[in-house]
Length: 175
Image (cartoon, rainbow, N blue to C red; front, side):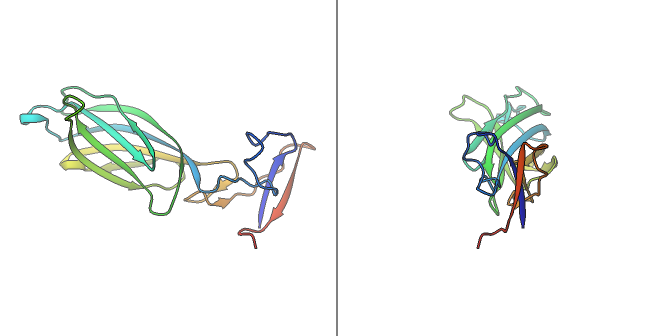
């Protein structure tokens, strides 16, 4: 059974359409995805020079990119990339690409790594795209009253305040 609580005030769910009649979230399977690109090393630019490195991250339709670290064999970004609200589907992967910037239209792909994404706290990742070494971390945060690795599970919530809310119990999946 699922027990969800919501405010009796109109619009408390962010627009009136975010919860079911049982006050459970309609956004099952969604999470806010954050990526922080840390540092890397081990890549070469054109003609064995130090590369001008940036990182692109992609998850579903969402894309983000770091700034370029110029002429560095050990780029350090510590760059937060907000990927927005994403749908966590089984087998969905975060794709991280390392690039050497040339003229923007002929940049060189140095390597790619992919990581399965599950909800929870920060997950530290070390991967080896193109023979280099890249460190990054990510966090996928489920919406209110949702949990589990893919944000599919309803998490029981206490009623929202004394006299200002209510809760109902329903079965999932519906019948």
